[in-house]
Length: 227
Ligand SMILES: [Zn+2]
Image (tube, rainbow, N blue to C red; front, top):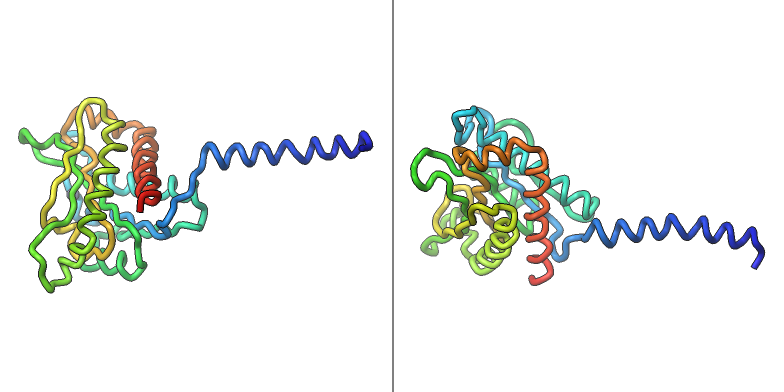
């Protein structure tokens, strides 16, 4: 081999190693999930919960949705589609949100909310799944995914609990309006207690949103692998 050839090979090899390194360490694509629907709770005049520092739920859910979208795209490029149920600032009805999710043929639906109120339970974190008596209404279409919903909720709880050292998520089942009419695996996450001073500290930091979306992404990865 000529010296000049060796030099060219050296130059050609190193960028490749750098690219492989980034791909294997920093980014792992989702499996068996091609469309993720993210539902940022509330919107427009519907502010959702507020706290005494004037943090508003609709803004918080939007920030979480944006951060998760960024995390999914950075790991998958355009191989995974991310759909928002409220693309702009306006509020959407549950029928509209369900229509957007179902017509985009989502594989998984994540609705973001925050716990509110000032009572004893107002600091609780929750992961909600739809449960109701079987019916013919559009609202109960999600019942056929009951098993997947619970499986994803349990996976999500493990990943999200890891980022809250001082409390944990509780899985709840019931006929929750933000999960009505969703024809795919779906969960609702009450991601923080807006009136919990510890959570207030967390959500004022930009890295909270990165940390949170990485935890949700970890759950999506695991769910796709075990599907
Ligand atoms: Zn809400």
